[in-house]
Length: 171
Image 1 (cartoon, rainbow, N blue to C red):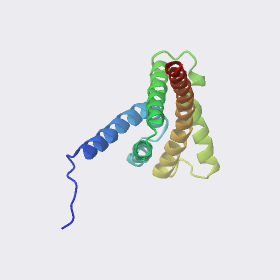
Image 2: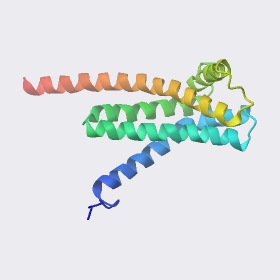
Image 3: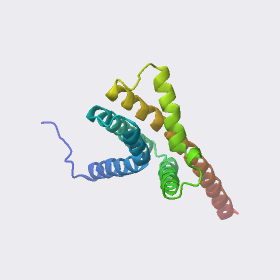
Image 4: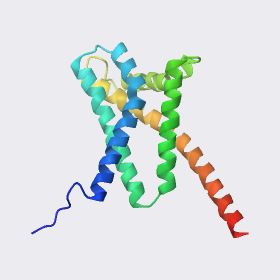
């Protein structure tokens, strides 16, 4: 008989929490793009399904990235990534609440770039699902690069602080 771990074990519970964590934060990060997508698209069910599928891809990506990082014991990287997502989401909410520079918003710039790339690929708006899915993936990738830069800065600062604390404790 093959032993199967029960989903209520400690590892399964932690993985479920990670799925929940990344589902929440990817959805929060996608709010602005989703609202703009619905407002500017044909609002068909296929278009909305394309956006939702793209968002689902990022939930899977970030959850698996988190799991991979934990298996390799890259704890500072995970913490930096989570803080990067918080900062990016906070900036998005701040930009929605107080649009001081609406045309400098990373969400708008990424959306415009995605729209341009989708047109270059010949996936015009007549292909609702495919064009919405592609635009969501491209926009999400560009915004993930923003999160990556923010996370890298946070990681470099935390590594410098960790070295400073270690050096001070040794001397």
